[in-house]
Image (tube, rainbow, N blue to C red; front, side):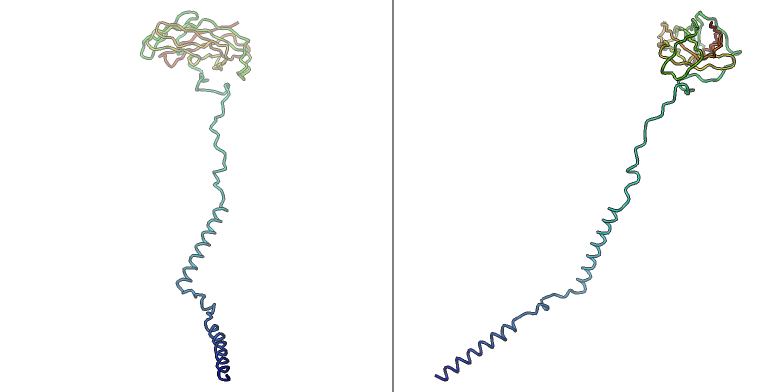
Length: 234
């Protein structure tokens, strides 16, 4: 009985010792399970971190960059300033140059006067019918002349091409000055005349307060020669 009890005691002691030392030896150091990176891996990790930082810096630079200086500039205004009627010279009106009246043939008033092209072919006839002073003014014309003279005229076409004689074909000379044309809606505008047809129109000029007579010069780009007409108003 004593031997059996001794054996049981030894067995228990052995089990207890195995439990203590066996389990303790089976433990794994957590530090041993943490893998130490190799030099190659460390370099790769460093490069990846640098690239990430560079990308972040680039994004910040893009966000903080000054906007396109041209983006906020207002679009150029394509509209052009309109030139007042009284300041227009050259295009759309006669010039202020005084012609040499001594070199221009004088034609009678109220008669059909033949006008010719540069080739010598007859263009048609021109008739300066009358000249008179008017007190009427155009509210859209900023000019405020002392006196305005209106001249009525007509023409007949003898050529194969349509003929139009408008205000660009005439110039009024007062003394040694070319009078300024007066543009007004109440003036009759001429229409192009086909061969054998006639048309009529009115032209007006700003003159001095004491104007009584002057020289009307016909000088059309279509005609080969100039004509002058002596006009008088009361």
